[in-house]
Structure formats: C-alpha cells, structure tokens
Image (cartoon, rainbow, N blue to C red; front, side):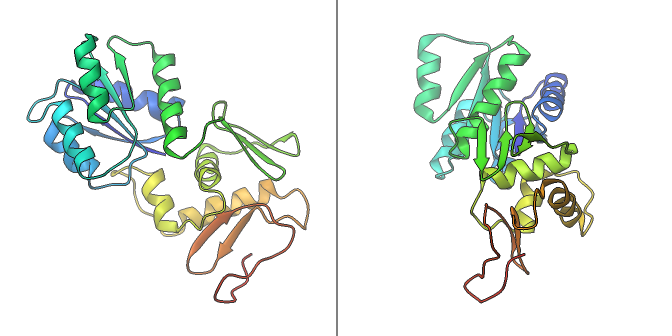
Length: 237
C-alpha cells in the first residue's frame, strides 16, 4: 500500500512516515505544504492520504475540498489540533473519512490507518480468505490450510495487495505504483522475483495455482484447481 503524508512540520511528517513504514509496511511519500500535497495527491495512485489541517499555501480543508471536487475517492485521515464540533462537521462534509486530534496515540493512529486502507479496498474484515490461503492484514500473518507461512516484508506486501484485488488482473505497473514511493530505485524484474518467492512458499500441492500469470498482462490471485485460459486463449500459469 502507498500513503501520502501532508504535514508542514517536517519532523512530525518524517516520524509519521516512519511509523507507517515500520508498522503498516506502507510506501510513504511526504509533502510539506498544501500546494505540493494537492499536486502529489493527484499525481500518484495513493491508497490513503494523511492530511494535516493547518498547512501553508493551501489549508488541509482547501486541499480536501479540491481533491474531492475532482471526483477522487481515496480515503483521507485528517490530523488536527482542533476538535471543536463545527470543525469536525466541516471536515466530514468536505469528504474526510476520519480524523485524529493531536497529540495522538501511535497505536490508535496505525489502527485507524489500517482500517481506512481496508475500507478503501472494500474490505470489512482484516482477514482475507482465498481458498486455503488466509491473509490477516491486522497481524500480517499468512497461513495455508492453517499452517503459518513465513514471508519477507516485500513478499507480504505484494501478497496483501493481490489479496485485496483478488480475482482481478493486476499489472506489474500497478504493483510498482502501489508498493513503492517516489524515491525507489527501479530494477526491471523486482516484481517477478517476489512473485517467484511467493509461489514457492504458498504452493501446498501441485493442483493449486493461487497466483496466476497472464503473459504480458500481469498477475491474478484466486483459488483454482486447474489452469484457466483467458479471452485470448492464453493459458494462465
């Protein structure tokens, strides 16, 4: 998952970014004013925006109003030092999904972010079940037929994104856009490496193909007992 943090206090912004990277395994970009925040929010496919209310150049409320005015439905968590009723009403009416008053508890912050990430993907439960595969997005535990599977951090992130998009064809470009921030160094076959590692660890018997490849198009996570053909007659592996 990829998150944008818009916060003008640089130290706080970097601390929030570190918390999200370490505790929610998110890729995180940071903007330090409202204009830059709006530009970045409209330039990349974020899964969540963490937005400070008091920002230079554009306030958080102005940014949120313009962002929603363009028809964008990415979940937004507003951080504010003000909890007056009228401020909260304005935020919610402008399209905020949740708000948190500063100073905030880090555990609550992470839990709210995870809940909004799930909601943005159309999930209500933190546990995603695909055939014999269980992915717990709250604890980051993965099991096959009840047996724990040990994954690297990046293998888990790839799997979690595919699990949220289960049944859908996900391109390599989509995975890269949602799993890395602006600063990552691009290596041509990095996704293929993680997919290969996941297949090796998730395979519980020869009949199960949990991660399918559509050649030249991308990947699909679903539970099938036999190989499928796509509309072009290409066998998915």
